[in-house]
Length: 145
Image (cartoon, rainbow, N blue to C red; front, top):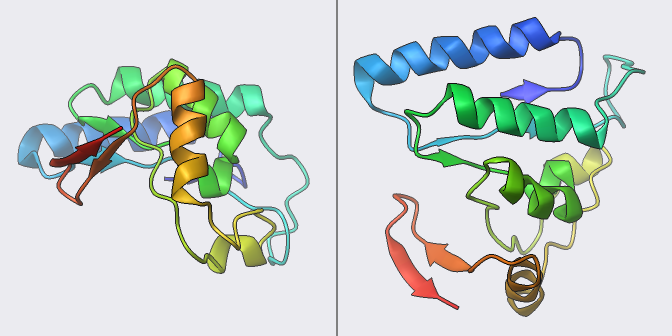
């Protein structure tokens, strides 16, 4: 769910409720990813962006509403690594990967173009009080640090 541009909180909740119903019907979602809209190089000319607090509230509400979807991703590329690490305390249980090179979000202002070294990523997760776990795309555990 892309958020932080033209939608309201009510739109976000409606989106989550629709996903919840669809998940009840299909069981097809492994993960919900709230993507934070990036403010540069776009045509929407958005001027009112969500604060860190609003982003964390969106994470927390998604974890409560989407209790039938096992994983909530704090995609650090759009939320920043610091906010994504904090989001683990708000219900996120997936930070995504190290990413070697990222250009789409970086073109819109995200500071992710050079990715992150695995050692740094593991250290940041451990330092925030969590256990880093490498998983495949189906969330099968591959390695625990």
